[in-house]
Length: 217
Ligand SMILES: C[S@@+](CC[C@H](N)C(=O)[O-])C[C@H]1O[C@@H](n2cnc3c(N)ncnc32)[C@H](O)[C@@H]1O
Image (cartoon, rainbow, N blue to C red):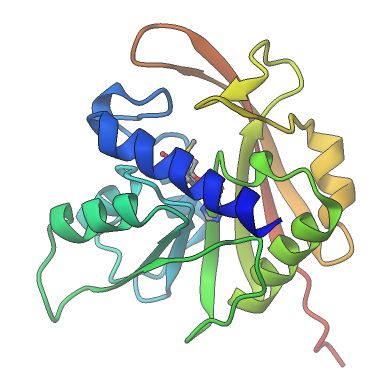
């Protein structure tokens, strides 16, 4: 089990070592629809937003450019986190950014809670039930009550079975609603066709959930 995890980390580290980010099959010059959705659901720029499995994505920089002041990024790949540390441009003291290497399928502890968890193309690599449950527990632990969870996965309508050589656990909106419904309410969902740098299309679903609050008396 441990060996498998080390291999997966290597697969991602190698992808980031061997290619410019613009050449990666998941690169977005403008991270949409994620950016618009985050702006829609997080009116305050002073609440922490986490890009879970951020890779070398342009999303964190776009959020900085849109005035978000509290940001976090986490990824299994130390190469990706190193890239973000070296390349993000922001004014020290005005914007707080935490960038960490971490495995979202392990039981994590967070220094503080946040208002939004964003995942594009990370959860869909997890097949094992216990690891999917660990991931869900992490989202619950990180988010404050009524926090927002944006999850983008390859749709079952997507022809490709793999991304970066790894098998993808394709989902439909109902699958995700069912898996997360014990702790989250789905408030929006959409289908999105992403065009890769070389023109192929990948069909995604985006599901937006709100964390259920159990503190209502
Ligand atoms: C297809 S890329 C997407 C990256 C980014 N979210 C984006 O949209 O550009 C998948 C990312 O998930 C990361 N990843 C895969 N499994 C992970 C895990 N168990 N925990 C944290 N990150 C993981 C990889 O290192 C990679 O950066």
